Structures are given as C-alpha cells and as structure tokens.
Amino acid sequence: MPLIAVIGGSGLETFPDIKILDRVRPKTLHGEPSDELLIAEHGGHPFVFLPRHGAQHQLPPHRIPYRANLMALKALGVKTVVSTCIVGSLKRKVAPGHFIIPDQFVNFTWGRDDGPRDGTFVHLPMAEPYCRKLRDRIPAAVRSSGATVHTKGTIVVIQGPRFSTKAESQFFIRNGWDIVNMTQYPECSIARELGLCYATIASVTDWDVGISSNVQIGPSNMNRVLKVFRKNVQMTKTVILTLVEHLNTFRCGCAERTIVEYYKPQ
Image 1 (cartoon, rainbow, N blue to C red):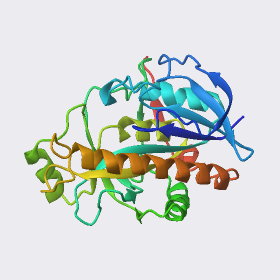
Image 2 (cartoon, rainbow, N blue to C red):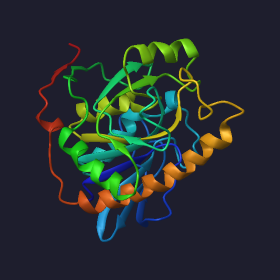
Image 3 (cartoon, one colour):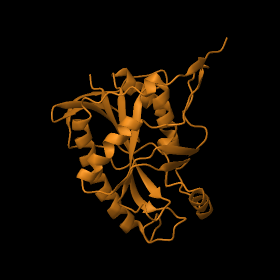
Image 4 (tube, rainbow, N blue to C red):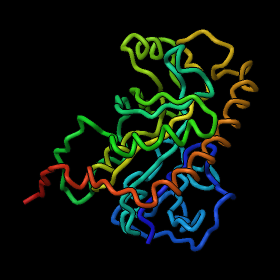
C-alpha cells in the first residue's frame, strides 16, 4: 500500500492530473474522513490523496474531521503526509505568489477535533511540530516549478471561517509571525500523535488585512487575489507531483520516535 499521502487544501479538492486506482472511505473510531481517499499513482509511484475540505469544498475549517482524516490515512499504511494550504502573509517580504514551508505554528482555534473520544489523552511533545527531514525535501521541488520559497516560518492558525480583523492581524504582525491560516491545527499535532511524519506547503495568496495592500481579501481586490490563487494552485499541483516521485523512498519515522504518555480513565 502507499506510504505517502497528500492532503489537498483549498483549490486542491480534486486532482485530475493523477491516475486513480481505487477509492475508499474507511470508517474510523472518530467517524468518516472528509471524503473518499483516492489511491493513486504518478509515474509508477503510489500515493493517497485526500481533499481536506471534501471534493466539493463542503467543509469549513472548524468542521473538518481532522482526526478521522489522519486515522484513515494511517489505516491504509501511510507513514508520511504532505499537506497543502493557502495562507495570508503577515510580512512584506513574504509576497503573494510565494510559497513557505512552516516550521512552527501558533494556535488560536477552539473546540476542534483534537482529542480522542475514549477518555484517553496524550501529553504530546510539540517543540518541533513539523518533520524537519520532510521539510528539507520540499523547497527544491518548489523552486523547480519556478516559485519563490521561504524555508521556514511561523503559521498562525485562526478559527475561521471568518478572516481576521485589522486589530487581530496587527497583533500577529507585532509578534513577528509570518503567515495566517485556518487548518493547520489540529491536523499537524494529530499527525504527530499518530506517528506520522508531516509537513505542509503553504502558498501565499494575499497580504493579510493588517498590511495595507491592493492584494488582500476584500470585495475590491478579489480579482487580484483570485489570479494569484489560481496560479498558486497550478504550481502546487506541479510541486506535489514532483514530490510524489522524489519521496517514493523517503523514510524518517520522526513522529514514531516521539515519546508520549497515554492516560486512560480508570
């Protein structure tokens, strides 16, 4: 079975460029995943593709069954997960059209699907939330597509589905954080808990509202933002297909070596 999985974010709900071998939707202890998992291949290399928001983008960020998604991938034998997401930039140097491979996150979400339902819980080390070895493999693939890539950065995860106020955005900027998104938590931490190597490819579509610009989310700027978004989606697909080929023999197991202690109710 495939050992590599791709979780497609906004704009990557479908992937017509791949050869689909099978479709499955395994039930887990935490329900069903967002949509069918596609067992696919590219250039003879097998992998699993899962659209985070569903194939019709029917799930908002706070309704995504993150735990079921990752448990379903693990049940198929997946060891390594590469996800994609779109982000707003909190820094001038991280411009729309750029890509960034985050190495840290800051969580501002609440009430999400981040704990087991059987009463157990985990004290999970999270100093380095993303797999460093996997992150190191991604920039070359991004550069080969012609895009600018930043090899590290802190991603602020907001609850959604609304965007930030100016005050919130300026608070994030004052803290020196780099990009803002709605889906990296709890996906990133659950992957670590389940022993999956995980990294994400974040594509910048706009400057967040705390930075004055004509390329930011808003009625008068949407054509500019959507133009960047569409270009980023095409480049992301190219990057993913390159990674599927290059990661075919990738083995790390960093998360499997994370020492965690499970507590169960008496």
